[in-house]
Image 1: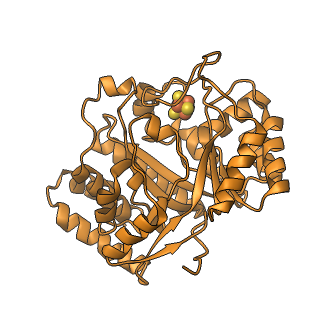
Image 2: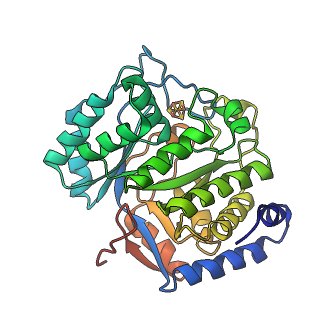
Length: 343
Ligand code: SF4
């Protein structure tokens, strides 16, 4: 297994192609069938009210703000019906941290969705779960178990940014700590649920801090094996207050290098995603030769990164074309990277 020092050395190395080839070789070993997968799902952001004021976020509105909303259940149902009509298999539902919504609100939402629809619910990243536990006076374990019993199927890795408290203190002072992020995933895995791990880089962190993030994710995976995928993306600065101090977004070279090193470092995580939503279709396509074996969602709706300046759009056919053109077979998957549909 790659050591922290070796990973730091790779980050400092100018040999982009060499690093990419090593990541491609490992990708081939883990996915010898030459398939690149994608999912059809929809992001639903149930509320944009939030109390955390993360400096990289252009999505939230403070309580009482005229543009703040909580989506009524009927609107959520309608969005789910549209997703199913478009061939979607899952819902990624996330929102701001609302101080008044207790666990009963979330349980009721999960139950009423499951009563009406056969759809995978991949919802509530660590900061939301920590918030639900706090406002409801529950332990993390009880919170996750109750949400699971109400219909939650898996948990997204959002809210990780860089898992280093010095960085978190600078960019998301109020949001969950490194330990809290980890505890949510550890508890979920112990309860038999699968989750994903993410990393938002290019927000002024050092190489060592980026490697610490990868190392923590690898250690959790060693303990539980519960992560289905690792999804790195770059900080998008438009409309964010952090964008006033971080003037330059990560380039394609930095993205591809980080993607490849993530693939190499996280040997124990089967899937690594090359992101077209934040990097654009062309960089995403090249990422398939830098360790990525999945391109994520065709995204029927996405509000969070689009608020911060990522405005890429793609149809299923476009995604399939870039996958084919990179030399792979495109296959639709489900949220847990399990089923390949016959297309
Ligand atoms: S990133 Fe999430 S927790 Fe932070 S301000 Fe935005 S909505 Fe709130």
